[in-house]
Amino acid sequence: MQRESFSHLANGPRLLADIGGTSASFGLETAPNRIEAIWVTDCAAYPTLGAALVAYLSQPATVAAGGYQARFAGIAIANPIDGDWVTMTNHHWSFSIEAVCSQFSLKSLVVVNDFTALASALPYLAPDHKRQIGGGVARAGATIGLVGADAGLGVSALVPAGERWIAIDSEGGHSTFAPMNEREIDILRYARRYHEHVSSERLVSGIGIALVYRALAERARVEPQDLNTAQIMERGLHRLCPVCEETLDAFCDMLGTVAGNVALTLGAKGGIYIGGRIVPQMSEFFERSGFRARFEHKGRFSDYLAHIPTFVITEQYPTLIGMSAMLSAG
Image (cartoon, rainbow, N blue to C red):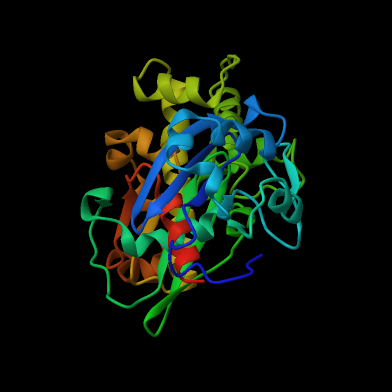
């Protein structure tokens, strides 16, 4: 919902939020290109979005920055947006956009899919806020693709339109998972015991890592431990558990397949960006992984993909930057 232009900040600070399946980030844009009073919290700590917003507006840094004066806001959320009522896919929050406007005396509130907002940030990322994996050179003015694993799996893109970019609102993470080898076929068979439709998100995501771990434990004929995503990543990255390490290896390969499919589908010669919180935590492991080889492994179109660069987003709060860009373009 948007009731008027966000072309300037003459009417006070703008409230920005990035709501994921597990955590939420809030900030205040107090001047062009300046976002301050950033606050990150677990979604599970609050019963509703409204309660989390009240907590944010009560933070000393937010009060000092004039948070209660904000009358214009933008929320990027890990969910499809269709109408006034929003029900999150990977969390229990549900809310009415109009009701949030009323509760916080907002004149305007824009709510968009989080990866649509993240895509909008891509042209504004500084060189040191992204890291290239593998070869390829981005073609200026070409379509840019975005894939990212967080609690779920997000997909979006930026399409050039004259002097502007158009961010694509997509739910591509829910497309059907495509196994590429015997290991991934076994993972798919295991996942189908629990899910009639196995999307890429079911496996290539924070919620999927635990499922892949259990599948690979069964494949290795070992008893799986009761581990969450963070524990699996910790043990895998430090080579403390062979099955955890193989889980991360499989994750990187499968993400490469998804990213390559997105690049082909979009003709994303401007590059593919990898967002979300999982890959940046993997650092050197991801660079050494089979991600880039799998990205290019597309038979007759392998050479086509070899020329498309892939970048990991390293900026800490890129979605807030993208949400700001969307409001300014309104």
